[in-house]
Each structure stands twice: as structure tokens, then as C-alpha cells.
Image 1 (tube, rainbow, N blue to C red):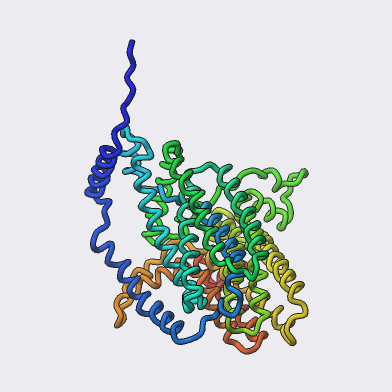
Image 2 (image 1 turned 135 degrees about the vertical axis):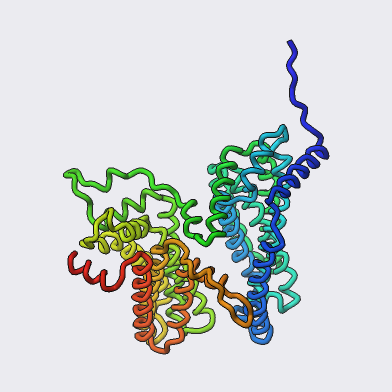
Length: 518
């Protein structure tokens, strides 16, 4: 008895078949229309004219916020670039685990999976094209950020090494993005550790070079070698990729894309929220009663260990940056540290547990949970408030130890500014977590001399928490008194709480009545 084996088609034939399937799928409505491209182009044009052009003009006519010419760029470049390459590599791996370059439309993926083609034939073309797009976008973004924030490209001696560094960082980001999706979790952890240790060694060796003569070229060589090491193994893993997992990722991404296009971005993000697991019995004591409010929050945070680890990392780092910026003179680079720290604390405040979602559910489903407040605010908000405050204080204490004594007369004002920023962040987080469906009135046209700006209202609604934090920090920085800034932050947080309660259907009069009954 003889058996027949499927013969793999030649590469040219496989390429033609993949192109034919893709074109047939595009004619079924998968190809973007002219009208679909016009609106994003319109928003990009508005952003370019009203934001990007003025910022570039202001940068070209004023000194850069951070000057690399005032320090020895050759000696200090390698450690900074190593740290940046490690951060980009880890970030690319994490992004690949959630939304990698091989995520395609579910129907097209199902058609390609049903053929005799190897996954390397139809996934390789998609990967190369998207990695080229990702590398180009990253290169442009990093170069733009470097031009706006530093004088790296103002001097011929630093422009060429700086361009080489940014090109290497872009290549690392693209390669790590693919690696994070096609390799197993164990391989991702090995790569994370394997990148971090050599980066520390290179950073240490670069400091021993005489006068840092070749430090900038060493800094440019590190990301290039890292991209060369990561890229080929990632592409070689394409034939053995788990197609079932890729199909699930594509289906989830398609659903998330539909949610995002219809205005409910928070529903799209909920699809990527990890499901709480384990520790169910830990919420109850041996006598059958519930544990305390803080203990409940800790247990619920441990049920999502990945989010809890991210919060444990972000809160101290954000608190340190926030304290460093608030302790400065209130202008220049210190303000950017303040803004970055506030955004970091805001992100970490949403990852400390699932108590925010529980509070929203109890407020929006009163007939199910009852209308008596009782200990509802304390039970739901005790853990986030304590965790955010403790994490921020920990980071601030570390900064105070290294910078002690603080500038004359800045100790009291720093405490007030940090406390006000934490209150503002908690109010913004409450506003964001009480968000329900997209209000219909946001879709109404807003006619201005510059056209319809209703899309900007939708974008502001999607990212209302970040908008509140950025606007609040800018207003606090504009107030000359630290006490006034703290009072302003408390008022903004109170406004956010009131707006969040209105989103859940709790009017002010009904709220007071329920509080009296509770």
C-alpha cells in the first residue's frame, strides 16, 4: 500500500495564491473605502495644523527643554540607550502578547488556515509588511520626540549617532513585537532576562572607556545587535505558531475594533481584562463573615496578579516622578516630571484591583443590590485609596531621601502638591470607571469655521480621565500658591465624583436621601 504526501507548493506559487485570496477577500468589503479614509485624514490634518505645526515652530525658535550638548554625550549615551532598548523590548513583547502583528480579520484567517499552505507563506508576508510599518512609525515618533524635547539633531556631532540610535530602537520595537506573539511565555521571560543583564554589562563597560570616546557608537550598536538577535528566530517560529490561539486573538481583536469604532472604547479594553481567578474562599473568614474592607481589596487584587504587579511597579515610579516634579521650581523639565508622575499614578490606580468595577455595578444596578448605601463607598474605595496613597508615598519618600534637604521653602508646598495630585488622580479614576455607554448627544455635529469637530468630543470622552489629569496638573502649576493648587485639585476631584455619580444615574437629591437612609 502506498501513501501520498502533500507536496508543498513553490514559494512563487504560494505567494500568488495568498495574493489572490487576499484580493478576493478585499472585494467582499474588507477594503477601506474612500469615505472611511477621509475622516481619519481630516482629523490628522486638524491635528497637524492646530497642534503639530505650532509646536514645531515654537521648538525651532526657542532652546530645547533638555540639552545633550551640556553633558558628555559620548560618555552618557550608552547607559541611557541600553535602558531605553530594554524598555522598548519589554514593551514590544507585552504588546505582542495582546495585539500582535499577525492579528488579521477572522474570516481571512479562517480561509487561509483551510488551505494546504504553510503558515509561514501567508503569515510571513503579513509580518514583514506590518513590521516595516511599525518600525517606520516608531522611527518617526522617536525622532520627533527627540527633536521637540532635546537638541540632539541641532549639532552635526550628535545628529548622526542619534539617528543611528533611533533606527536601532525602532528595529528592536518591531522585532520584539513579533517575538511577543509567536514565542511562548517562557521564551518571553528568557528574552526579557537575557536582554536586561547584557544591557547592564554594556552600560557598566561603557563608563570605563577613556573619555567615553566611542560611547555613542557603542550605544548605536547595542539596539542594532539586539534587533538582529531577536528578528530571525521570531520569523523561524512562524511555521509552528499556534493557529487556534491566533484565531482566538483575531476574533477578540475584531470585536474590540468594532467596540472602538462604535464609541465604546472601555468595552473594547474590557475584552483584554484578565479574568479574576483563585482566592475565592479567602474573602470569607472561618466563621462565615466577610473580611475587612482592606483585606477584601487585597484578595481581589491578588486574583489578577498581572495587573497587581503592574500597579505595584507604576505607583512607586509615578509617585517618585510626581514628587520630583512637585519639588522643583514649577517650570521647565520639572513640570514634565510632574505630568508623567500623575499619569503613571492614574494608570496604576486602575490596576490595583477590581473594586472600581464592583462599585460601578452596585451603583448602576440598584434594584439588584439594593438602594441602601451603608458601607458601600468605604467597602469599595478603601483599598484603592489606601493602595494609591501608600504607593505614591513610597515613591515620594525615596525621592526625598535622595534629594534631602529639599529646596528652601519647598517641603510644605511639595507635600500639598503631591497630596492634591493624588486626590485629583483618584477623582479622575472615579470619573473614568463610572463610564457607561456613549452618550448619543456626543454624536451630534459641532459646526465651527474649521468644520465638524464632533469627533474631538468623542475622543475627549474616551480619554476623559487622562484629559482631567493633564488639565488639572496644568491648572495647579499655573496657581502661584501651593495651598491654592491643593484646593483647586480637591474641587476638581469633587466635580469628577459628581459627574461620575450622574453617569450612573445618581442625582444629587437622590444621593443625599440615600445617604440619610444608609
